[in-house]
Length: 379
Length: 221
Image (cartoon, rainbow over all chains, first blue to last red; front, side, top):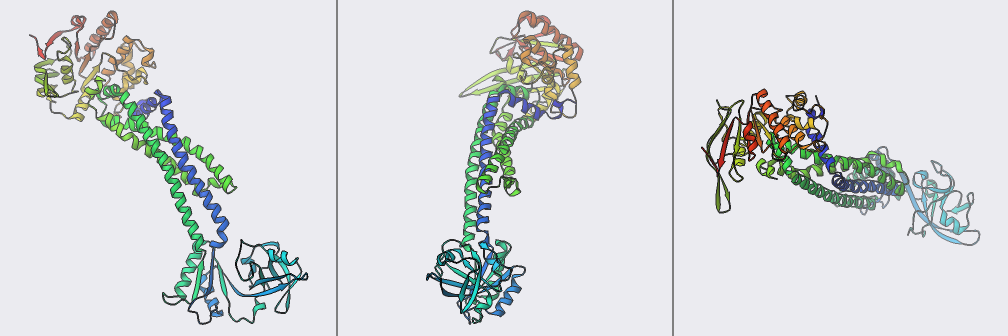
């Protein structure tokens, strides 16, 4: 059996597209641009999202618990910490006590500084120098800014409540802070604040933002009612807002991409319309020799689909390059573009390209198929 | 029985406020193995008449019968089916598809029909019209006479009963026209089909079994 007999629509469509290569190429170019717009904008958004969440990730995963407005103790009790540990499941629960003090350096410099008593210091702080033990039993950590002001080095002693603690590491300061210590923080073992009976804050470190939200909701449900707030529970809600902004941004970018694909679809509509009008007589001959209307329709739709598929394929390859470039620039890792969260935009782009082309082909195909053969033969 | 029959066919066209009567009650028939030529000046209604016989158009009044079956009121899809199975067309301007080879052009009317494979018949027909060595040539690579031979082969691919020819020699010189007509006559006998041609070429008369003269939509006695 010849190829012609096997898939006539495909053969006819392919040959027809080959007849006016420049026109076909220009129409396909429109599709390519549309696909590149959709795919690369989509992939760039994924890269931005990844970068944003890796930079803000530490905050999104945390839940902070402190005493609520209706708390009897104005603090978090041991019993509550135990209960929070039960409710938080696998997440690490880090109870802290806070105070403030004034440190005086040998050179006479003074610094007002907030004091945090915590055992699991390594879960909360990143150090620029030195190391945090898993459990802070002796020694202290101090903000690198304060250390600089006071001229402190690793191993130097600091005094708190008439006790000396050797500095084991410097804490990386995260942006400006307006705490009572003017940004400085001293981290000491929990027992250093043993004269305070209760905890001031409890930080819960979840695996990701979703788990953090879940834990926050569980705790809120357990401790608080609409009228009474026993514990104040906070997640990085500003991070949620950033996530919402990223969603809006990606929708807007995809919208722009879609507009270019619609424009490309109209270009195909125009090309198909022109080429069917040019081939009016030919289509009349097809109809006269007994080719059915549905077969003419299929042939022209196949042409449109071909144009979309070829344009889509080239567009996808170009977008992959553009996407990798975007990942390289934004996250520094070009290979990130190959993950499904990003490559799915290539699938969408290709699908949209074929869909837009076929939709654009419908009217010209319908028009050509339904013309009276007598009229069409007259030319 | 006649393979094709027109009975008192009237065709009126509405053009604006005016009504043009292209055929004014035409009776016509053609039999198997018969070559009938319809001759008439331009505007006489012979193209309209060929459209009626070819089921490209339906009459305002009267009846059209193929092999005794009344096909007058067939809809477009039914007429397409009749054209595919019963009729072959040859046009003045050949109307081959430029992007297909000779053999693909011949196969064209049957190519969407997956129930039959006409590839061998297409080659056979091209050999019979003397183009056995031009199977893979495109229309551009063929002369006018060769293109018309491909068109004739195409018209016969589905083993029709009737071949309709619209000025088949109109675009050809005298000698080529004559060989084309001889070819048609030979195939008519081999395939036992009826050939109905319209022309104003007097040369066709010599090859016809019967000549019908049409003037102003009326057949002359």
